[in-house]
Image (cartoon, rainbow over all chains, first blue to last red):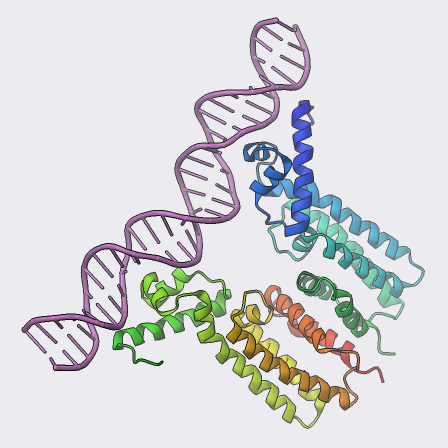
Length: 183
Length: 183
DNA sequence: TCCTAAGTTGAGGGGTGCCTCAGGTTGGCC
DNA sequence: GGCCAACCTGAGGCACCCCTCAACTTAGGA
């Protein structure tokens, strides 16, 4: 599989990945490919040599970003207090959304995802389910909050973050207050 | 100002408005103008005759839709219970979002708005401020919920509605629970 | 050093949507 | 019925982004 690339080709590939990461983070996953190539100092043809489709580029970048979320979830599961762990996870998750539009686009389903990427999402989502279950068992999260409701929360927050990057914590706080058991 | 249109011109104008209302509601305010013209049974040139810009079309349609929101707010202010009135308003507001993508786009600020339209929004927003103030005075809405937070809620709900048209009431319910005073 | 396969280039063709304008049509007053 | 201003038409130019491919360049082994 991994035939070694020629030195110049490897260098160009790295530059393309770097430029794509930058531009995707700034402008989202639908950033023009021409501009990625230009920023990488490479022709559009070379971009297509290395990444025949937009998906190929995304697949080379997004799993790394999603992995950060897994770390976040694991840390949250380790937290002594289930509720505090959940809240810390939500804060970290949306902080990442706020600084990387590509993550925002990906998790809000604003782009078509490749099977590979979908699988990574499912893995992350599994961790979230565990976090939610733990917080319910501890009696701190209201019992009627379903995993699907978490999906809606991600959608909602992705939009709030995009339009008011400075105010999303406030919005999240109101919502989280609604999630706590009344008692 | 209002020079009478020739009969055929008036008919075409009406058809254009009808087609635009349909398409905007279905697909949002960025629906292709060519398709509006086609649906109206008229050439693209005629569309531009009557509405030189996309804004002109929006301005001819959206104020009517926003007026419905005003009625809704007035009814909510008339409600005996301030909290129940507020909740009814929110439900009505987002129900309209759900069935008309153009309203969704407009209130979520997804398109550039004309001054005229902006003014209509401000009027509606004034009503909302009154609703919020009333619910706070009655001690049912938490005091730290600011009008700007309402803006974020609109953003959030607009996205939830777009991606899961059947589940937005659930999401709203969680949020509203967070808004009620703890007591 | 020379040769070749690997890699690069960028003009160009395709698609979509916006907007214009020269030329053709027609409503409605006389 | 005749006329003309009002109105309509739609091909075509522009801008953006997509993707391809024949011609060129070059890394690196022999």
